[in-house]
Image (cartoon, rainbow, N blue to C red; front, side, top):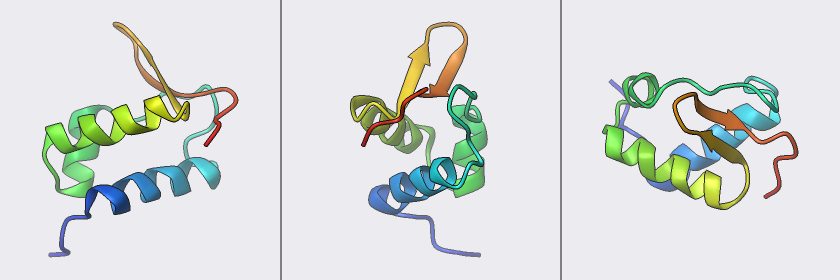
Length: 75
């Protein structure tokens, strides 16, 4: 079983997935629980990573709808 990623590794991997087009601009990212299960980290860790990417303008939250990749993801 692989070692869970650090916060920096988690953020970098999410950015990589966006840059490689796995998560395209305007698309909804997987749920917090799905990401927590995938990365084998706590939901609170995912919340912190998503909040960091939202602060950077890479992700945008839509209340009641989810979190989406910003149309013009700026880093």
